[in-house]
Image (cartoon, rainbow, N blue to C red; front, side):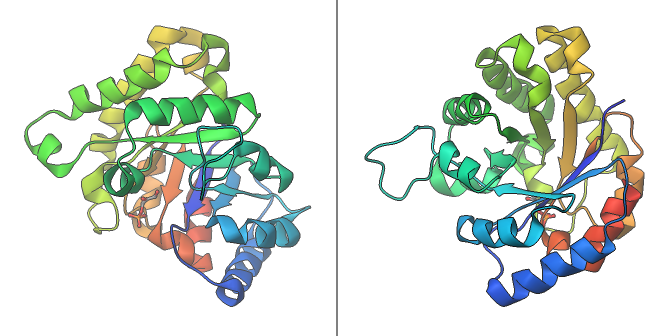
Amino acid sequence: MRRKLVCGNWKMNGNLVSNAALLAGIKAGLEPSNCEVAVCVPAVYIPQCQSTLTGSTLGWGAQDISAHTAGAYTGEMSVSMLRDFSCKYVILGHSERRAYHGESDALVALKMQRVLQFGLTPIVCVGESLAERESEQTKAVVSAQMEILLAAIDAADLAKVVIAYEPVWAIGTGKTATPEMAQGVHAIVRAKLAHKNGELAQAVRILYGGSMKPDNARELLAMPDIDGGLVGGAALNSADFLAIVHSA
Ligand code: 13P
């Protein structure tokens, strides 16, 4: 049985004061459960997470990382630096990074290798745009993204990866994929994973992301291949985030 994971993606939001309140609210409302819960925050606030969350069941991580290990890469951050602050997760290949920073599938695959090399958990995002969905290319687009990732990974490492299906048209728009639509794509992702290793594919968590809210989380999370959520806007409010965690 796969352990569900609900991860907040704060994107470029927050400040020291609001973060303290948000983290305290989440910590206070977290009940012992089998659901893994984490927040991926702007890098400068990772030390704040470490000092606030050490000893709690709430994990933390980053929203991107360099594909390099060290050196002359101005503005970049390495996975080993994240490890210094006990980060467990790194979101990779978010559609906002693909769109605004030109990240390619090949670069995302390299970053995934780097994150695995240093023992953190990559949460790798895939998903189609609205134009791709409307021209019925969802399966082709997501399959192609998965194939590039899978070519870069050893079969033995498969279960260490988390995949997040985030239809680009559902991110921050209030439009959510229906549970059936999302399940359909999650099943495609699982089938791709199974080509690599049938048994380990069953252990890989596939999260849904895109306007997940307290009022739609339960239905989405009830689908057989939806193993958690990557939550944007609703992760900035402790009551909403906790409601999603409780649904999981
Ligand atoms: P929203 O939940 O705000 O739609 O964002 C989803 C997302 O991009 C999570 O990574």
